[in-house]
Length: 102
Image 1: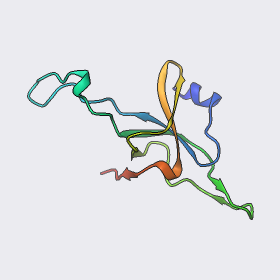
Image 2: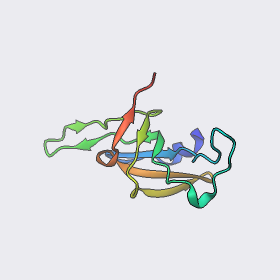
Image 3: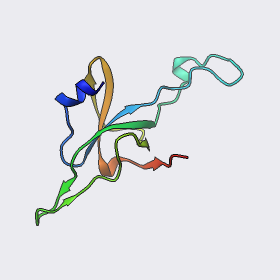
């Protein structure tokens, strides 16, 4: 996985995420059909850009770090395929929130 990110690094305030897998089975063991599965809005940050550059030349860093679990909007993002895996590219301002690690 690290090899793919040496070839692709997000620029400015862009964040590369890998969406979590949808639940395919309930706690009781019932299989959920693909059409009934909701769109996954949780993801893990795998790469980040340096941040936004202001008119004065100062850099405002992005609000998340690699490894953070984040909440994504239902629609949006740019789909990328790297090393046969699906990733999505979002702007820092598009990320709805992040989950605290316990």
